[in-house]
Length: 175
Image: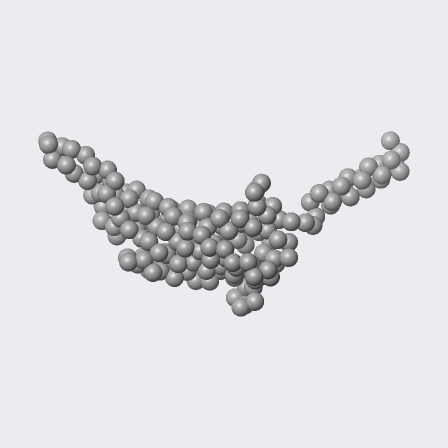
């Protein structure tokens, strides 16, 4: 192959590569895209207004969501009041219910408890004055022979990971 043909193919490849991967709308899935004008995001410290308060939940959840957005988008984190995307969240439910009962020698015993955590999120595209709200809820099972404090110690990382994933998906799949 001569040199001019090689240069032609390389040039064509580079141009096509840039055309299909360069600019445009960030795409997160088939349903949603993020407006390319959005460059900055602020994730406010989540509040906890649930009847029972886990003091570690809201700071860990807020930070995990910040990290996820930084890793998986091209948005820049800011603490400025004029962020293009402003995210707030409130833990509205943190409750335990019995979900499993076993019977031994005619006596009923609780065998599984379920911790349910609900977060109300508000995400505001300040460039277009577009405010959306959503509730994200997850349940986590733990043995009934554990206290809530014991279960929280084991479940906190899973709670934070799952809720931050769900919040991220809710925010970025709806734009």
